[in-house]
Image (cartoon, rainbow, N blue to C red; front, side, top):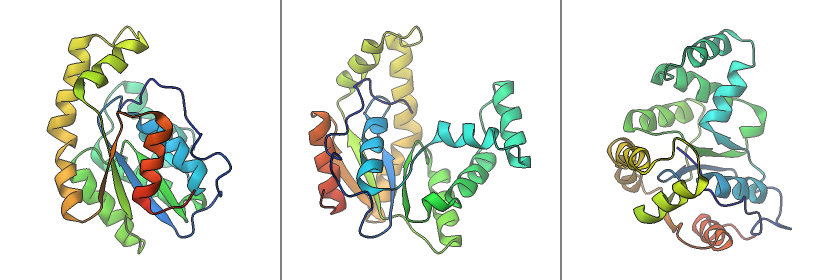
Length: 208
């Protein structure tokens, strides 16, 4: 899912402690252009845990030279979508890395109910669990405006609205899923970057 067009905001994290008081394993959830990438960077600085996006995971694995990395590279070079099984292997491998031992911020995974269940199994197998799912909400009209403001050739309004339709169909059901697990925390993404960051900090019970 795409990130917002706004510049990366780190004001909330400026001068903040570089490690959380306890491990925090967080999923960022929200539609394309909600600003998740910007806020993931802020949380990384504040909590001292890695911000891990789907694209970063895939690129890192593809460059690793491992059998899994070779499989990922082949899929990416073919232009095909990475299947759920391969994506699960990539996530499992990434979360085994030392920098994720004390927590992480996942941006872009899971995107479907099946992936959410897979993530739960991956964490449970390592005797871990999610601590919170932060849902960034933004009105659809604003999401479209942000995307159009980027001026990219593939950001035509009909394409943008199709991405939002796919989000509603495939990813929005995770809202109910994680709410039922008592993990969902909603923040208003239609606010200044720094204020959104403060909302996230409050939702996590972390003192900046």
